[in-house]
Image (cartoon, rainbow, N blue to C red; front, top):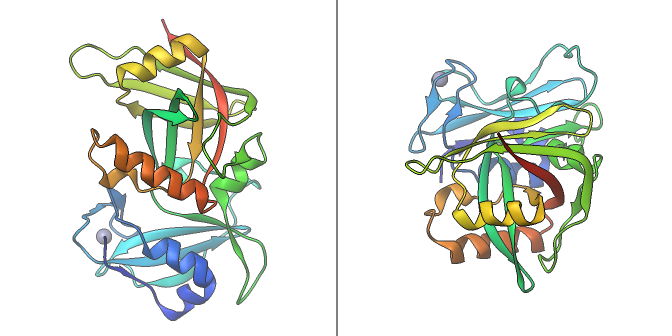
Length: 248
Ligand SMILES: [Zn+2]
């Protein structure tokens, strides 16, 4: 786990829950707020909370690039909370076949690289809500407690993927929100069962939450399942079924 450093005002702004979340991360390819270069997992990192209007982004920086601090930034033009990569929201996407009761269902797991919060008040003690979770909850996703069955279908979400080549098994995945906003575009390495599942059903389960799959070897299905069940039981998971089509 990365050595995460937080100043007193950062701790105050985040609150106990936010401090726990922001501190319990292993930074993988996180981009430094100061020099815009990667922060390696073994380097210490300072937490910077950037508050602009209603959105508070938790960012990380090299120790020599930016002190841990709360920074007010001018409000962005867009009034709505954005999860766009240019606002500091980077996501990891994992494709897997996940047991739901007796059915093994094609599943995508979106994990934010770093937490982003909604600033619901002003000044000291204002509550920061998880932006990404509240964002998708307002667009048809549901909280997930137990993974007994597939979550409800979220209408108008649409995902496409390119059929992976035989050599590298890498597919390009694009996920669009109901209003056409780009939710995710990037690569996944889907197992063959995932492809077979989405071809059969025409949908995939999509979970959003911080689970920590990055630290687990790709082949260790048991460890992945355990982490996912724990995240669901802890209320850290929201999910939906979304329509998905192969391209071309
Ligand atoms: Zn730096």
